[in-house]
Length: 607
Image (cartoon, rainbow, N blue to C red; front, side, top):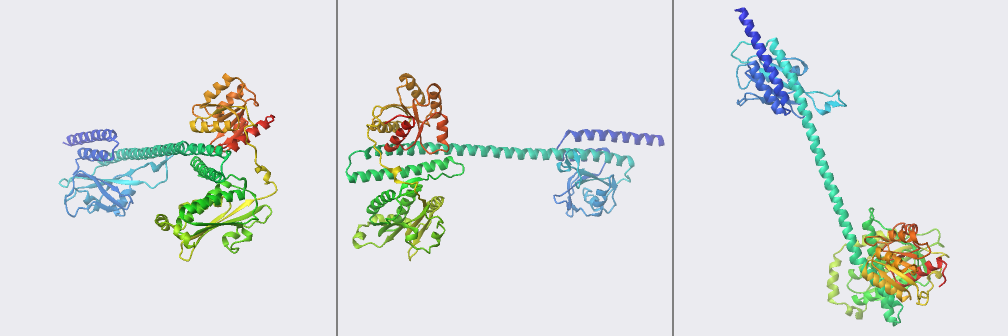
């Protein structure tokens, strides 16, 4: 009988060992935490004939242990599914490496009973839960290990106790489960990392797509500005310069000159917008060069008077005679700011007289103004500070009668605008770039009544009047000069051809770089000058010039580049490509005549 009992126990142990091997294989088949744990509970229950089996997991802050998996669900109302980590049994289990036999009054044992009032023998063992953070460089680090607890409950009706062999089986299974759970945890974290990487890659792809769309939008905007506004404006300015040389009446000449000046202002604004859109930093360069100050004032006063008459305002001007005739500065942008100030005041007021005053800062105005003192120069012989003051004053009864309801109702919209709107802020930034200042003068009611501009200009003996001496643009100078014009825009090509013919040149016009090369090879060396647009489709002007210089000397034919805006280092690029001169659009009569003369004289030819 004893031998039969021992054989029976050996068979049970053998069967249990077989269950353990099967359990290990089943655990290794899955890398999902829930499948691993449920497989463990089911197979252990079969192998060890358990009443219930449960798994407790720590929560996120590791202050409590939660019952996450069990074979038999407890339906009692007083069922406890969480236990503090500082529970004595929990602390003891976490400290013990092997199986821990729990007391009959154990809280975690009672919570794992599956609703049974009487408990059989209860055993528990810890299972380490390793994560990616526990392994750095392939070796375990001294990181606090997180433990799960496996609780096993024997049937209460029997007198069974936990044998040494059963506890060995539990330890082996717990080790296998811990390894499987660690693999599953690492895999889960890897999948989460991969998902995050995929999301980040999608975000990067979207950012790249947005950047490409923004670049395409900017390119489309530049094309619209170039083809829809800049090129037509260049054609208009070229045609207006033709009329300047005709015998016009004084009134017609004033109108033509004013239109030409305003056109140049608009052209410079378009170029600024184009340059800002091309420049990643969103800025542009000032064009500092000598200009005739009194001449600019007359043109500004002429436009201001026209606007005042149209708007029903009176106009008065007072320009100090002692102002220097020639100064160094950015004429085009100074003119832009003055026109903006005039338009701003006329839009912000319903009636009155516009007083246009220009004087040296040291000779007039409010000398105590804090906005003025910062611009005083220590070298009065090299720089001069000029104040442009615009004020709206009360007009006479006759002037008031000119104002109409149409103008008054239109200005009511602007009276709701803040004193320093967006356009004024942009204008102020432009003035600050020129080392100047601009401010608004309100009246007693807080409404805009005046504006003042203070700018610093360079003066000196090097800025003499000789550079502005009138030149002869008659056709006798360039009569018979053979010129080849390569320009892709049809209207600009026609206007430039008219300008050259006005100077007496014999012009052949083509629309592409290939046609330019064909014309040169077909006509031999008969063309003395080639006017070459740098930006043409199919073949740019730089490539055309390089091919011409490959077979011809640098002095024949002479190549003059045509550019739409003052690009950085463009003159150096033109020289490297074998060009002899440069004309910036818009091309007007005096500009093209000056450059032709300069290039021919530099080549050693007499005019």
